[in-house]
Length: 141
Image (cartoon, rainbow, N blue to C red; front, side, top):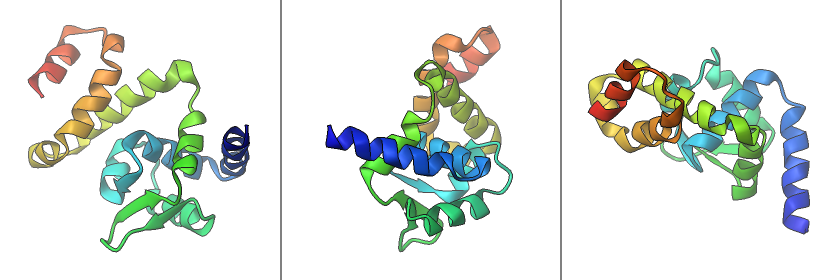
């Protein structure tokens, strides 16, 4: 169907971008249609998020919103395509990794502000937690 072809074309476009840009886009897609640069920086291991975001903007995939530091995908199909680049079997572990990055990088006050985002990502991969300390840490949120 036409919708599927559009997503495939966008996926090909994203795959031709540098790895850092791909990582930033897939992480942003996990966060949501709209995301803050600051939170994205804390959620990913990519070292130069601002440059990767700028490349994504230049390629017409995301746009900066009026509120500085806030971005959104230009279209929901772009977010869908970026998310589809994560192999289905890895989505839980990617989500858990995002939650762990956020939990360790954000201050307590910032975690309170973004509690639903952190808990959602940690919960999505909670079945992958293999030690009690990690499970207790999630439960404490």
